[in-house]
Image (cartoon, rainbow, N blue to C red; front, side, top):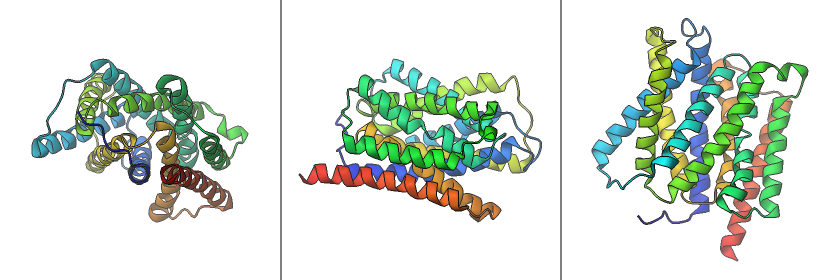
Length: 293
């Protein structure tokens, strides 16, 4: 197949859009994992809903678009799906016990893990400006984390583990993005993820309320859209460039908190979000200079 044309600006926009969708799924997972919409659902059931309804969306898209599929690289798909399922389940588990801002801040350290892993595994070069941008974004995440004794509870470790696991998933996504078309990657990923999640949920399933069904459907649809944006973004720029931009999820999480729950970000949240945005802008500026030169 012909690789997607490199376009860092479009890649940044796609990852930014994916971040908006991902933040929304986190808020819905919080509602489902607590008593907001009915008796709390187990994280394994929430991740099952995510894979089930995302798979239905992607299968429908394949039926309409009828893309030409190629022979898949099963080893990479298995690796990507395994890390992705574990990561998203841990993330959904963490937001049920700690504030969304804390969980999102911790788990979205995954771009740093992804950037660092891209050096030995993808042989990507990471120049000083990218290191600076990543450091700036990481600083913003740490500010939003508000490192206090309360942050170091078991649930926070779930989010931290999710960050490391999803960071590894980024490597598999990048490897696949150069071999197969995005919609094939999404189709196989969600089919495999649904298989794994269906086995796991059989041990904890409980009948959702009507409101919970709606939220589960929404999580799946939003995640499918986020994946489409993310995979296409990864195909158009280096993983070390696009990964840190997903820190924008932290900003969207704060905006959704205000819009839905009336939570006004305090000064610490505003400073942290501004610093994270600055890191992303440095990356875009740096890549633009390289293309012009």
